[in-house]
Length: 310
Image 1: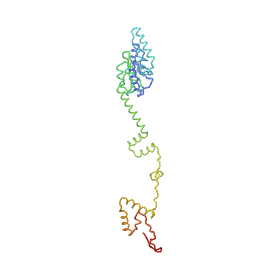
Image 2 (image 1 turned 60 degrees about the vertical axis):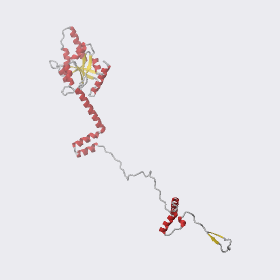
Image 3 (image 1 turned 135 degrees about the horizontal axis):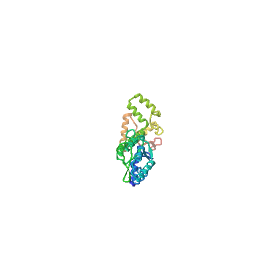
């Protein structure tokens, strides 16, 4: 088998695994595919394993199909020898009881395989069988059943059919359900219960279910008024009480600063103080120090009458 085809078949069987298929794959074979493989001198078991991605297989044959081989007519010793070879291949496969062995005539491959694959007629492959048949009507019937891989021989090459439409739809639907289940599980186990209770609309039942399902979470009690961290706040400095001397010094500093831009600031300050307090000394308003009077002797005077000089 070519590498490209083998890769496609492995990928296809991995898609069937999403529907529940596991190795070893159970393969139902009919009488006609055994005859065609023997006529082309092919190893049927190896071809089936390669068609299913090289996985382990379990060939199975129904009681009706093996009876078709036993009842096949022969006209010469060569046909009888070929018939014996078919029966040996069928005996190597596991016998699948179909429940039709009590009938006088075996059922056709279509009726027997349909009854084994879908016994209740629900359109599902309950036991996960792979069907290997050369009959066209059998393959057409199996395409309408969900999850049935089909295998057949074409010019000495084993072909695995692509997934049927109903099977593809079922696989996509199952993947969506798994994705939805994963999202519900991610939101939390209680989300589905909450939604269900809200749809029912029972207030009392909703309260009881919440108490039973929702875990109790202890909240931390916050006490006190919210505010900045007292350790990170800068402490305010206490205000110093001003004395009379400091107030006088502040006034003088203000007057000196104003006199630099306005030479008449001292006179204006004196006028303002006079208007408020009634009088103020020039020494309090001016910047210069107070002059001290001294005595000196006059050259023309006597010692007892000194002259006062300012």
